[in-house]
Amino acid sequence: MQDSIELILKQKIGLDPNSVGSRIIARALEQRQAACHLADQAEYLKLVKSSPQELNQLIEAVVVPETWFFRDQGAFEVLRNDAQQNHQTQIRILSVPCSTGEEPYSIAMTLLEVGLTPNQFQIDAVDISEHALAKAKKAIYRQHSFRGKSMPNLERYFQQIGDRYQVLPEVRRSVNFIQGNILEPHFLNAKQYHVIFCRNLLIYLDHSARQRTLDILDQALLPMGLLFLGSVETPQLTNRAYQLVEHSAAFAFRKQELKKAPSIESKLAPKKQATSVQSPHLSPLAPQTFLAESTLIPLETAQDLADRGQLVPAAELCESYIRTHPSQASAYLLLGKIYQGLNQMKQAEQSFHKAIYLNPENYEALIYLALLKEQQGNQIEANRLRKRAQRLIPSSSQSGNLL
Image (cartoon, rainbow, N blue to C red; front, side):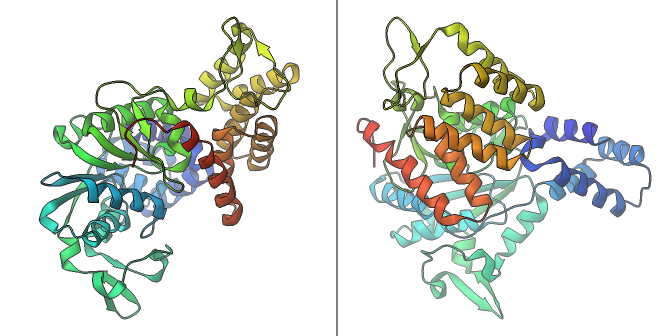
């Protein structure tokens, strides 16, 4: 039954089951089946197929929101700087997914802090979860939602109610909450925005859904608009016309107006020889090894298998490739991502370390390892790795429209 349920979730919301783990999905199935008082798994599967309400309840149980006010402060610093320079009559902003509201309210507070009035900006906050949106509209939060180190004056934007805090009406009125699925047809009805926050959604989607989501966001974002992604999601913009915004603690990108910007990978990769193909992650400090294009085919096949969810054969193919090409950082990077999908975190960590050892300037490996360290609770090491990755980018991003 779980395979059938996972297929439904993939078709409905683009969920990559490996991103949340089979155990979490299995636990959600058990909870919902018990809540529906159904002893037979086949009966519950029939219910999910026939009842949109129960499918939404299952999605609620699988997708657990994790957010807090001013999460990743650098993003709001970029937003503040951009708002101060923006001469639009009204700045239109999208937050998707908005979860329980901490992000869109943080956006509103940032804009109010720079002197904008509520009629000078419009925030659409979208999420698939009815339960999360209900909490967002109430706007009452416990101390757990205030983990950021750079909160504005609480008394200015919150009213204390016992041991909780409620966002003041002035801020609440500036956010328009919408229930929606970004992958549904006619999502947002052709609205366009100057700024889009879409952080840590892509990591939960399969390859096809990621590309569709990026296409939708690209259509919704105005030329020269800002797109904010999660730290591990930045490689997804490869070969798209976006310019990295120079900031040491933000993952923001400016949509280019006419001319396609150089891809992120091309900026970070060493120059290729005209007569051969160099590994894109080969360190300039390592011995120069050149590969014929044909030797990269096994990695491309492994990537294709991984994208289709066939992680075990993808891992086996990667391991086989590494035995004959032990100095290729890109192979270890891909293997690490596959291990992560298989929930084999120790092996994933070892692979990312190996990729960084072979190429100290391997941006993706640094970011993936930082995320893994954060999941382990090692925030100090995660921050160190993120700063190290960020130092690789500004030196290659001096051109273009940067803040």
